[in-house]
Image (cartoon, rainbow, N blue to C red; front, side, top):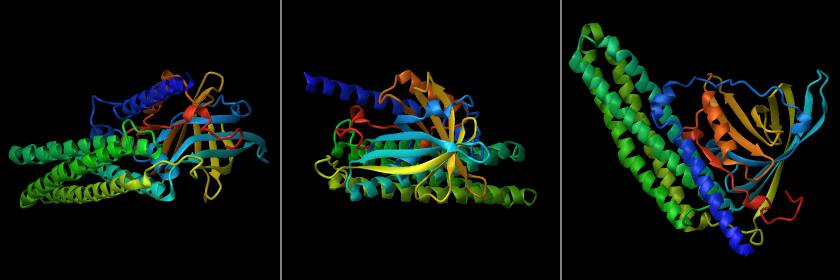
Length: 398
């Protein structure tokens, strides 16, 4: 009876994970990836925080319910049962509340598997970065072509048709990466819908289409833009416009090369995982719990800063929402680079229970999107496997 109940619970969890994942990557089905990208800010969104937070009540143990793909692949590859524990430790001279952080998880892949997940994840993020950058290029062309080429309908059509082709290729690439990241999430946590071999095969198939179809269409769109730009550049009064369009075409061709490179890396890592590095190990086989300590400070209200051991600087830890009496929370972190562009961004959901109500998770994700925090491409949301909350480990071992 116990084994049957465990199997049923595992099935329920698997269904929930799948549902949540596809809810996230299809959060705005009425618009494409590029359309959503055009509406985003250059740097980190600055959403309102939950400033009624009481850190003493917020302290204690939490389960990580899910996290952005970027953070999962870069910070938690091959990990399940991710948890956090916070304790108030005192106050600073300026009366800011100080607290300690203890993150823990169980690593279920051998080092080679962890590396393959990490580099596959990095490749998917590189594709997203190229796609997002190209969306801005296409958007810029569309914004100016109608006005600048209104007296040249044939050339205008050539430019807008090429831009539409590029945008369609980028939308397709982003969607395909979303599916690949879903499969990588399964591999990272040994939570396959079917099997290791089937999951890696799906990554290979999608990566192949990413390279041959999406990158191919984007390259063609870039070449067509380049040809149109050269024709426009030959017109004395339109030389500057033509040069911009030709340059945009070159950028799309380069982006296609970057996407191809990412697709090749994804196929390489998928094959390595299939050959054995992706095989999960049990505690008896060497799976180990690990912990990372840190410290934090409450800057103002829900705006916290956390510095983990080994990190050079602290990072934002903004509590955007709390459900019930500190039963679940939506947390956001984002850092800009020196140029004002987003360097890293993630959201994660934590809860006192290892499996909160689906409506809580969906509500948090909808709230994040309403604040302009996208769940596209590198920001897609992945559920964290908690294995019933104990991970089969002795009490207090994590």
